[in-house]
Amino acid sequence: MTTTPANTTCVSFVPIQDNEPEFGRWISIAERMPEPGREVFVLTDVGQRYIVALVDDRWWIEHGEIRGLVTHWMPLPPKETP
Image 1 (cartoon, rainbow, N blue to C red):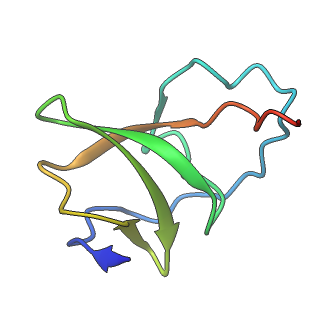
Image 2: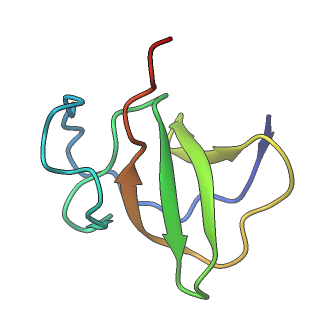
């Protein structure tokens, strides 16, 4: 994974269960941050979307760089079981 510049302010970390109604709803980083290490969708101030994880107060992306500042996040849907 490569790192991108952090643009976050630590808020509270609230674990989200797979069955909670958070899926499909953008959550402002001002409201709360995702659980550390969990992959989530993020939305930036320039309209770009990425799948990233929050690690050591930084957004981590596997390939490339994040364009813009992260403003919102959304949990990934539950993984399908075979």
